[in-house]
Image (tube, rainbow, N blue to C red; front, side):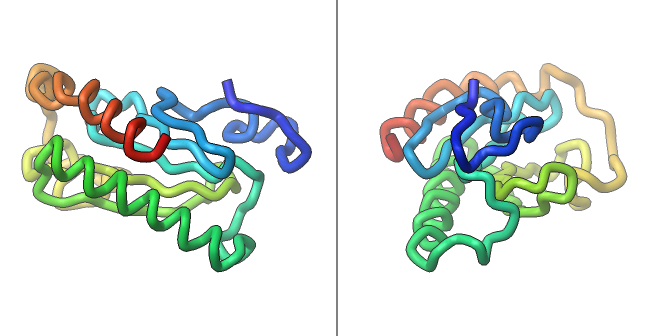
Length: 147
């Protein structure tokens, strides 16, 4: 479970809950793995304090957040070997600062569209078994590197 502290707003999903499978939590942020059948290499880096905009962080906080995003991206590339990694910070549904780090493959459900775009094909669930088998090592590497 997430923690509800002075900076959190009751009812905010990302304040009250981890937002996925918790990989690592530090005093400033956490990294979670999104449980998405179509995207096994989907992570989020979530700022722990309730902040909606990147510019509300100090310069040092922004640098730290982006260093963590870059580290997660690098480890995803190392472990999963995607053709591309998408980075996104939308926050339209949950006004809480977080970055999506999403491994992309030429045969994933939406490629070359964004994962929120129009599906291009159906994917057999078995297609991602090899990738899913790599997730425990990737999760452990993220945790040991950032924890």
